[in-house]
Image (tube, rainbow, N blue to C red; front, side, top):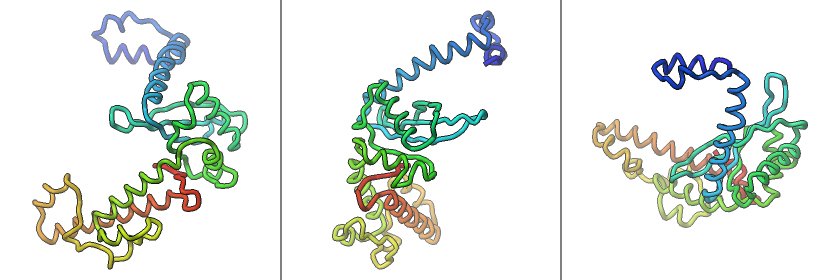
Length: 244
């Protein structure tokens, strides 16, 4: 904070407004935390209210003084494009799953956001976050958030990827949990693999052996995409427990 105004004067030396600016560490901190940050947070809440839903991405960490900090980001659609923003940095007295969940719930209530608006949850791989019996993940699934609404959409995306390199009849007749993307007898020929519209110009410029290698890499990408999506579906509750 102490170096912000001197830095601005170096960057914009031709600005009369910045040249005449006097703002020390205390005043700068106040302007950032009590004015700019408040305005930015209000804008964020408005965007979340206007969005059809948002995902929560969180992690627990410790600062340089070993204080427990709960970092919460939100991901949502804004003007048709995904946007990820910092939502809250919450200092915790306790670091267990119940304390994290209570802090998050308090923040949502304060900002007049509801669990019905929460459509996804992601965190790091720490047991505290992901453990099905004691972690924050369990508390998310036991609340009223709408994670289960994502299941049909994820299935649709999985099938869409699979259709790009597998036989349509096999996908149509198979339940998503029985779809075996490693069964080469169910694959289309390499020439039938669909890389997407964006790759059409690139393919035209390739030699025959280059084209085959190119399509093989696309097939491997589709296979891995389907596998990764499948791993993120809880087969017992049909609830997404992790969204990347």
